[in-house]
Length: 216
Image (cartoon, rainbow, N blue to C red; front, side, top):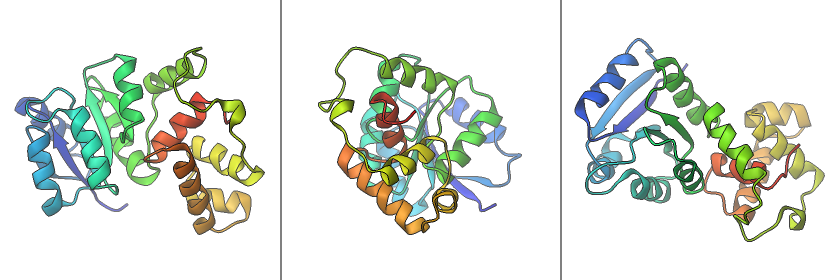
């Protein structure tokens, strides 16, 4: 397995060092950047080029919410995994719709953090039971959370199948094999869906699909 380069942004040095130490046994994960806030993170990204950022929310200067949006816009190839103490569903839904690829609580076990890092790097998103519960609640909410209603959204059979397999966490290669099409076609369909739905990444696409009942 290729080594995944990781950055961590958190204003608590003890927590940063604890996360790094707890993941040290996993040799496929290498920390290349530590930052105390969003400003330091943004300054360090060009030189270190991490694959994944572990992002705290409450930080001095640029907080994690603002920084997530900036990283998503300025460094679209970097995947963002929020690591926070906030269980408020408003944080989760807002961040997942604005660039985050996954959301973990700070009491997560090192094994889950490792799995989340690998998933966002390989699949583009990580959804655990905590986030899934919020997604389901959003899906059944009567509040109008997006301008388009699900019944107004039309998908071709191929688009619907690709979206379904993405939500089932299959990779582009696996989807291509199942549908007997090329991985490039899968990526093209995914990119087209993201553009239509205003999703910034795969996690946002999955979030939109579940919230609008586009998949069974």
